[in-house]
Structure formats: C-alpha cells, structure tokens
Length: 506
Image (cartoon, rainbow, N blue to C red; front, side, top):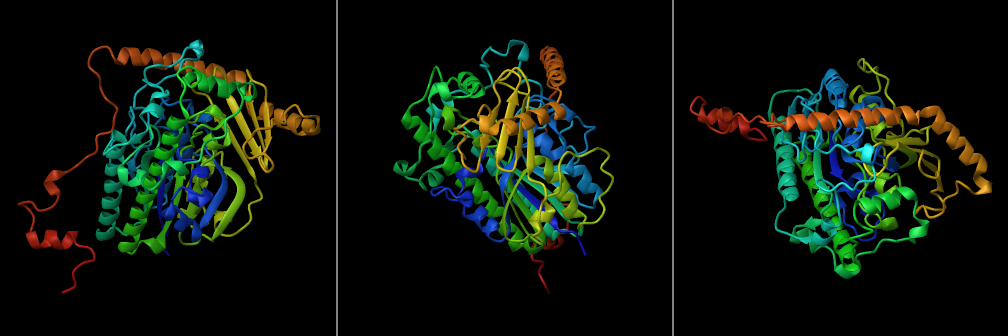
C-alpha cells in the first residue's frame, strides 16, 4: 500500500483561541472546522519557542532550539541539521515548500526538492538581538504600536500579495502532481503570513465582522503584570506610545478577518485535493508557528509563554485519523516523529542521525491513548537578557527565567493565567518539583553564554556583509519558461493533453 500524501497548511501568528474551531463565538473558520469534524483536534499544542524562526526551525528539525542554536529571527538554520523534509525524502516522498519558513543562511531548501516561492523575510543576520544591551529598545526592524494605528482595510498589502502567490503556487503544484506520472506520495508545506500583524485585511474579509461584535481583551493592572510582560510592553512601545480602545478593536477586527482569509486558503487547497481525487489519501494538518496576545495582559504579538502567545492550533484529518479531541500537551517538536510514523505506516523509520526531542502523536491521532501529557519550551530572543523556559505537565504550567520570579498556573482553573501559584504554600511542592526539573533539564548560564557569543559573531558578520556589494541568500524560485504552456519544440496536441486533468478519454 502506498503511504499517504501529507499536506501541512501553516499560518503565522494564529492563536487557537481566536478560531471557531477552538470555540471562539465570532471568528469564522469553516474550513478548519470541517477538518476537525472529520479528524483530530489537539487542544494543548504549543510552539517550542514563541518566535517565528525558532518555532519553525524546531518544527522542521524535531530538536530544541538550544541544541541547534536557533535562538532568534536572525539565527542561521545550519544545513547540517536533518529536517523533516530530509527524512520524508528518505521515506520515498517528493517534497515541496510554498511560502514562508524564515530560513536564515545560504541553505534555503533544507531538504525540500523544490521551493515554489521566495520568503517574505530576510535570510541574513539583520534581525540579530543584542543581549549585551538588552535594555535598549529595538527601533529599525521591530514591532511597535504603529501596526495598531494602521489596522484596517486595504485592497492589497505586501502580505496579501505574498499569500496570494503562496496559495496560487501551492494549488498549482497540487494540480501538477495530480497530472504527472510520478507515483511517489507527496509532502507539501503551504505556509502563509496571515493573520500576522499589521492587521490589515481586504474588504470582503473585513466585512464578515461588525465592529460592535468584536470582543475586547482582558487587561490587568500594571502591578499584576509579570516582569517579562512589562519588558515586552516597553519594547513594543505599549507603555509609552500606547494605543486606544478603538485601535484595539480595529486590530482584533483585522486579525479575525485575516484568520478567515487564511481559512479560505485552507479550503482552497482541500478543494484542490478533492478535485484531483487525492483527498482520501492525504493527511492534512493545519498549524501555526505561534500565537498572538492581541492585547491580553496589555501585551501584543508573541515572545512569551503565556497561552495566547505560545499555544498553536493543531488539526489533523485524513486516512487513519480518528475523529475527536486530544487533551494531552504537545509541541512542534512532536510533528517530525508524527510525520515519520505516517510516512512509514507505523513501521521502522529511516535512520534519523540525531536524537529527536519530541514524541509521535500518531497514536493519539489514530484513536489510541497517549501516556505523555507534557510540553516544554525555550525562548532566547529579544525582550529578555537571559533564557526563558516553560514546562507544562497536565494542567500545570511553569515558566522560569533567572531574572524573574517563577510563574506557576493551573490552566484548568485559571485559563487566563491571572493567579501565580509559585509562592502559594498550597503549591510549594509543585513549584519545588518544577524548579528542580528546570535545573536538571537546562544549564541556563551555559545557554546564555552561547546566545551572547552567537549574537556578537552575527552582528560582526552582518556589518561586514553590508560593506560593498551584497550577495543575497534570499531564495529565487526557478521557473523554466522554455518548457511551460506551448512552445515550438512541443506538439500542440500533446501539450494540451498533458496539462488536462482529468485526462481526456478518446
């Protein structure tokens, strides 16, 4: 039996809390809902690191960011790190990437046979943070409250331009694979930029929602905010430039609209699978790299281990996937082992060459029970000067950084994380046990020194690379115009027949 095709449709900065699939009463996500209704919805999935590039590198590699040096949005993703694309090639798949993966460095494929689009963000070291001057606010390339001031409608933006290209290229490639003679299963990632800020949506998606219906975030007093949230607020200028209630409403309106826009592309790709008779033999996953605070705790964007920043949607449907919800905690690190189980139909994997940090979710996706209910995370980028760590076990979540008081939450009774139990005598044993796990799992001082050394080296390299002409690492997709549509060396009738699906039966 041929292994199933695999399609991952990826959003950027989509928190599950803001989808109809996960119970939001307003946000319309009918296509993701439909996948969940016939498949598995994971209710406690987390990114391993709540920032774009580290999140994606850990998903691609199945390894913690501290093992592969994926500290921030300007960390090189080393070509020597095996990825899920390499492993699926070894399992007999043809592999394709359309859209954003935020690869930094000269290797812009990382195991994919082909990459259909360029990336939306730079591939060099421009966005390197500086822990040597951690209190200095990032100005040139970082989020600020201007994105809230700009939230609203537009006919197009660079993000809309990009996602239209990503969606077209992915759909076109699915059609090409249906009408070629290659019988290998395919693995594709179609990775979109929405609903990532600046919260600007096309009118047809904006008009799905009435401004009066937009729910507002729950803020909290400054004295009750944890130190990292205070740092984030300062870094994004929420505490100085600030924002109004109307700007908050418009930003959330735009985010909801762009979530529906992303859902539309999920539907387009699933429809293409259905039209080409590939849906019944394709496992479809919907996921994001991280979430968005959207004003909760007075914070925006990501960069923290609070729920709306670190939780991600994970919905899976297709052959072998049972319908239902999965309560167990899991992370991006678990995606690679899961794909290996799918690709090899539960049999032996190809040699992976490294120790993976995750577990396969295929047992729970296919209707079995998962004995593990744990997730762990690492954050080593901007808005901090020391590594941050997260452990979730069962309903309890523990967040630790050397510079900050620890945070402990019971998510069953306190899903908004308003009551820190770390100093509560009733939870002393739990807090002590988590602190011991942090010390056992991580050497914070050593990791910090690695981060500092990496940042210093990359800042030096970036300055040098910008002296004189620049050799770009940004991916330039190949497009062989001499062999598309109809050309003089082709038989017109054969070209027409080759491109038609279904094939014409004489």
